[in-house]
Amino acid sequence: MIVALDPLLSSDIGFSVVAVMLLKVVLAFALLMVSVMLVIWFERKIVADMHNRVGPSLAGPWGILQTLADGIKLFFKEDLLPERADRVVFRLAPYLSLVPAFLSFAIVPIGGDFTNGGDGTVSIFGHRTLLQVADPPVGILLFLALSSIAVYGVMLAGWSSGSKYPLLGSVRASAQMISYEAALGLSMATVFLSSGTLSTSGIVSGQATWNWNLLATGVIPFVIFVIAGTAELNRPPFDLVEAEQELVGGFHTEYSSIRFALFFLAEFMNMITMSAIAVTLFLGGPNGPILVKQIAWVWPILWFFLKVMAFLFTFVWLRATLPRLRYDQLMDLGWKVLIPASLGWFLLIASL
Image 1: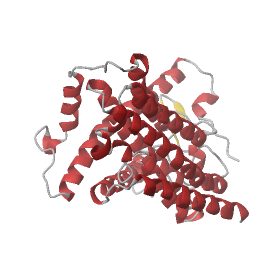
Image 2: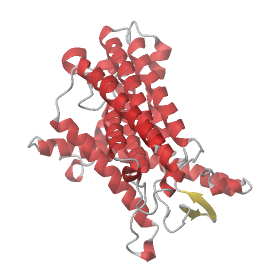
Image 3: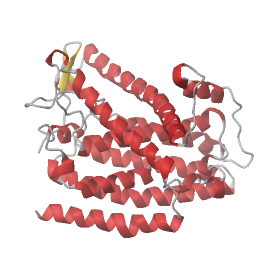
Image 4: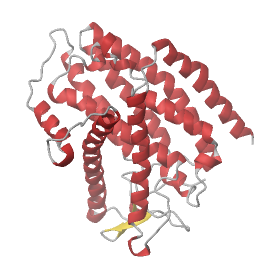
């Protein structure tokens, strides 16, 4: 059993150690914010290309600053509060969606050399540390717990709006996210059986010699994870929470200004985090060939982001090509197909 502990915390905690920890938090947050801006632009350009359109093209080179311009516009719009809304809960709900999205990303190792017996650490200000904000021994359980908290943000947003359309959207969201979280957790459980640890760095270390869990556990848990993760994110074709023809805008219909932007920020943060978790669990995380020894620390980071980009492209591709499921089809897929399949495969792996 691999015990997860950042080497940074094994020494006396002084000013330099605290400085390194704060630096990792700030850099992770900045990286996630910039990534969200670029992923929104990436999605709009890819969907536009698939629809034979131009997409964003005026704000900055190739329209890359369009997301920043939209964010500034939303920041200066009026923040309206519905007359029948529960004021405290209405204002709190966006943060219940946003904060878990960032905290989930904090447990993902985005770099470090785990090959040839490497421990994945790098040197920052003379301290050896992992390229992740935190490495708790139960990191994946923490991810599942935080994703469960995000359900409350969506549910409370619809309930507190004092309007029927957001309420219906939040009811759909809570039912959908709870249903597919069972299949998501069972698909991840097969990885725990294979790797013998719940820490993300330990799981990555066990895949250092190209023995990726995609091969060790079989393709079925990976496919179930991708489908359940897409539903957990409320992404097409599982976006019944925001079905415009039925629910106007879903649970965030009554939101405006910066609070409206926070929900979209949380959605794309979660999309990046889900892609990063999938790469960590099944595709070796940052593991990959070191092509140039002089810049060996760069290659794990590069491989990690290339794998994440492949997942992000898949999410965009699904949005551009597949129609939205009916609600009964959504529930049937979750309860009658994914959960039995993931449970059966888990029992099969456990019996081997």
